[in-house]
Length: 77
Image (cartoon, rainbow, N blue to C red; front, side):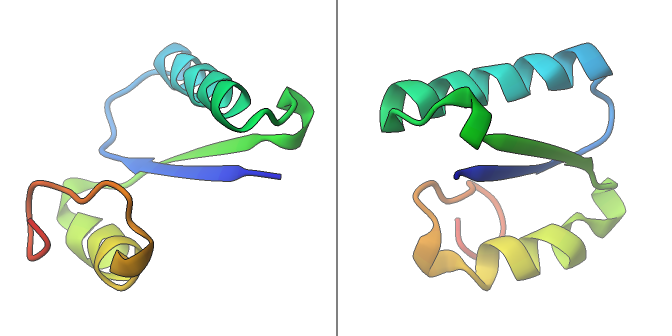
């Protein structure tokens, strides 16, 4: 039952977000063998002014041991 939570800057329309969710879903199906019915994908817009506080600190820095891809910015770069 994979759930993927994507947080990103605003500026992408619903069609782009749907394509992203579809591609993430396809990658999970191909890589892990899960059926589409068991996968969920959420996409949340976060303003640049809130990114470090709302995403970087709690989701990236605090969970660094679970990161398989580190960002190329901020303290973990």
